[in-house]
Structure formats: structure tokens, C-alpha cells
Length: 340
Image 1 (cartoon, rainbow, N blue to C red):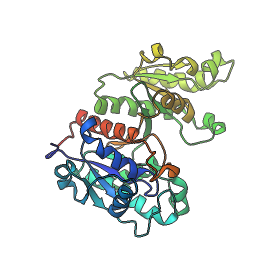
Image 2 (image 1 turned 60 degrees about the horizontal axis):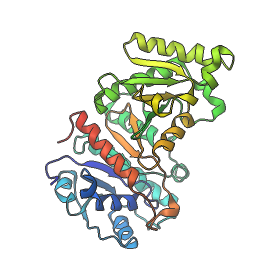
Image 3 (image 1 turned 180 degrees about the vertical axis):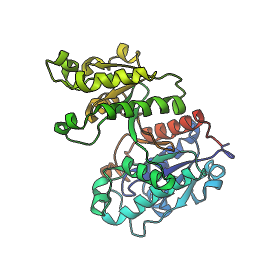
């Protein structure tokens, strides 16, 4: 029984994508995988239609956060957030954008008010949101803005891909490779590592997390022979972090950081750009890795995949990463002491 436990908030993502599918499929496996109760934030009618399209016997009931855990054993509790338009599975449309955004806003509001204990977000389609005037580079920046507006305190979100075999953080994220050296600063590396160390301690139960920092250039610059950023930017940042008592080492050649023996030396890899972190993270755990946002005043996780419009309502979408995201949010909230 899950009655009496604060639920997680699960936003629908783009309703034309696989968010509704994997929510339904994850709920069906709730007993098998010990799924924590969640409150689905999205269009109730879309979820019901998707269940019929997938021929899944899943009851869907409108409920609020206080009712969600009691409902969860026998139905998916839904905080109804209507899109106001017909949603066609696999057909992204600008008219769905408002419902996508509203679901995220509601999930964050419920979490900040203490009605749910964490936010789990299904995938959004940024191109659709951009067309509708969405003013943020992505989900993460939007969440940080919502947090800042609600609390009055600026926060720096940090993206981490976390799987059973590797946790990896990119210091720079969605920028072209040619812009990475200019964007990479000592302050950015220091601030990122501080947030990672703090949140791994508070939310993952690691008293003194070990941070391995990758170099930017091949062979970590080869003593300046292959670029100067490793010696002039990354190494001073590591020195400063060590002086603060953070267990951090590097810069390391990225090509030797991710084999089995090397990963045993650290708890998280701090990487200099998007693919340096995400390629090994997804190669080592494509179906069960989780996108975690550190640095926010609430817990947020997400599956590590996109909307997969081509799989919506086909029965071929995999719920594995969503289950991992829900379980990780559950574990993080318990580590932080926010479980009921």
C-alpha cells in the first residue's frame, strides 16, 4: 500500500509523444518494480484515449495531490490539465504547447508547496515550444526560471546523466563544439563542481563524493602541446576546489576515464562538453539512465530520451528509463528526508 506517502509529480511532456504511453506502461509494472506513487499532471482525456489505442486496461481517475497515493494502487491519479485541443498521437503541433508548459508549471508549483516530493518530467519537443514562443533553451532552463520566480533566489541548474554504471555531468551543454573553449571558464567549472558535490551529498547520500574531471583536449592537453585550456583553466579550478575540501582530481584524458577500472575511482565524471558526458553515459546505460537536474530547490529527474513521436500509440515505446527516473526521484527524496 502507498497510502500516506507523498506522491511524485509526473508531467505529461508533449502529449503527442510517448509520455502518456510510458506513464501507462510504467503504472502497469508498479508492483513488479516497486514503483513509487505518482500524480500524473496532464490531459486526462489524452491519457484515456492513449490507453484505448494501446489496448491497455489502465483506470484513470482525476485526483489531487492529497488523494494520489491512495488512488495509485488501483488507478493512475491525474491532475487534469486539458490541452484544449485534439491531440493526435505522433503528430506534434503548436496547439499542444500550452498544455505541455502548463503541466510543468503545475508540477513545480506542487513540489515547491510541499504537496509532492519531487518532479519527474516526460520529454518535451523544444521545436514545438519554440514555434509557440517558448523563451528558454530547454526544459532545464525553464525549471530554473520557475524556481527563481517562486523563491526569489537565482539558481544554477546542472545537468547530470545518472545510470547504474556512470554518473556524468557536462559543464557546457547545448552549444556548438566550436564555442566550448570560449564558454569554459574557471568559475563555471568551480560552480558546477560545488553544486554537484553538494547535491550528491544531500540527495544521493554520498558523504564525500569523488569528482573526476575530464580534460578538454586530447590527452588533457599533453602539457600544452595540444591546447592550453587544460593547464590554464581546468587545473586552476581543480586546485581551488581541493582547497575548499572537495574530493576532486584531474584533468584526465577523456579516452581513459570510462572503462570499468577507471570508473571505480570516482562517483561522478565532470566533463567539458555535452557529448563528452552523454556518449559514455548512454553507451553504458541507454535504457536505464536518468536525466537529473542538480542545483534546483526541488528534486527533478527525467527519462534520458526524447518524445519519440514515431513510437507514440504503437506499443513499441520503452518505459524503462521513466521507471528509473521515478525510482531515482524516490530515492533522492528519501535521502533528503522528503518522503511523507
